Image (tube, rainbow, N blue to C red; front, side, top):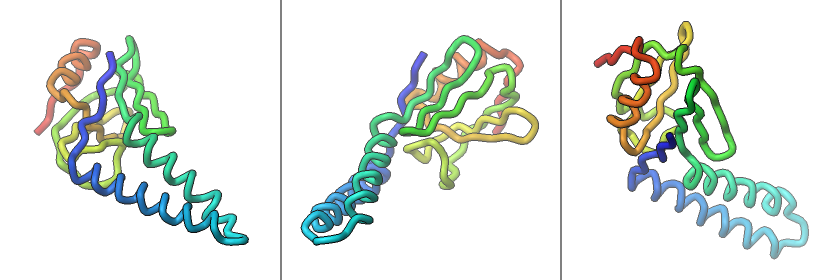
Length: 136
């Protein structure tokens, strides 16, 4: 079962402003005789930000949670998850919204994600591993 990331409006403004800025720099870089940094780096940044915006999702497979954040991928075994809690932590995470779920797994590992339907996501996750505790 796949869940897309919830997207906050302000995150869209930040990402699309940066894409526009990088596009503007790229346009001016190709007009310069030798600006390889701009010609190479700017399309990579545009690709990365676009991939993050359009391809952030969370898939609950039979035995694992697969997280895709643009080109970055992470997989967590559902049986390794021991607790979940709601959070609005602003720090970097594979999430496009401040309305997040913090997943604690393994011995000391955590990750924050922002599925579009948090309640359904938690229900499906707890169905696959009834040992998961809700904290808050």
